Every structure is written in structure tokens, then in C-alpha cells.
Amino acid sequence: MRDQWRSIGVLTGVLFAVNVVARLVTRFAFDEDVAAADRVSLAMFLVVGLILAAVAFTWARRSPVARWGADLAAAVGVAMLATILLGPLVVGANPFAGGVGTFFAQIWLYLLSTAAGVLVGYLLATALGLDHRSRQLKRYAEIKSTKPRRPVRR
Image (tube, rainbow, N blue to C red; front, side):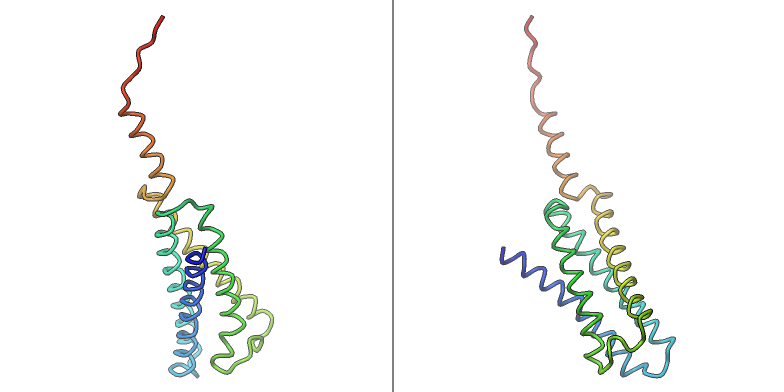
């Protein structure tokens, strides 16, 4: 159980750290350039999606979706709240400074990038036959094909 919470915490920390780095780069390198700040934000969302794709691919190989899905959702939820509420405070901004539209746009973009990342990672593992269920079905087929056929008595 301890390892389960550790992995959730590490994933949450990594996702939040990516956001903090993107905010610091935006603040110090592109403070006046809005287009460059938007590109940094887009890169941050892509990195978050790629991280979650890699995590979903790795976790899908080890255990069924029912076991790791809730862990991943918890990590993403906590990281999203930290990103939206604590991230602006790191660079000295107000989380609600951009207005309600910007606040909810951040939520939707974060959920979209994380969902796309998880979906890509899981579908890639499934397509390659490396996910937990595909490997179980392969083992079942191998076991059933190696058993000798039993004669039928009449």
C-alpha cells in the first residue's frame, strides 16, 4: 500500500514540477511575448501528455486497468489542482487573475492533455499486445493448445 501512494505522489510531483518549470520559463524568458508564452504552455501540455502516456504504457503492462486507473486519476486530479491553484502563486500571480474563462480553460486543457496521454499510452500497449489482459489471454491460449486432447468414451 505504501508503494502505491508513493507512486501516486511521485507522479503528482512530476506533473506539478513540469508546470512550475513552464511557468518560470514563461515568467523570466517570455514575460512580454504572449505568443511565446502560449507556445511554452502548449509544450507543457504536450510534456504532461507524454509523461502520462509513458506511465499508462508502463502500468498497463503490470496490472489490469481497474487497479491502476484510479491511481492515475487521483494523481492527475491532485496535480491539476496544484497546477491551477498553486502554480500561479509560485511565480507571484493570482490563480484567478485571468478571469473565470481562463481558469476553466486551464482545467479543460489540462484534462484534455492528460486524457489524451493516458489514452495513447494504454492503446499503444493494447495494440502491441503488451497490456495485462492481452498477456493473460496469450498465456491462456498457450496453455489450452499444449494440453493433449482427451479421448471421448462412448
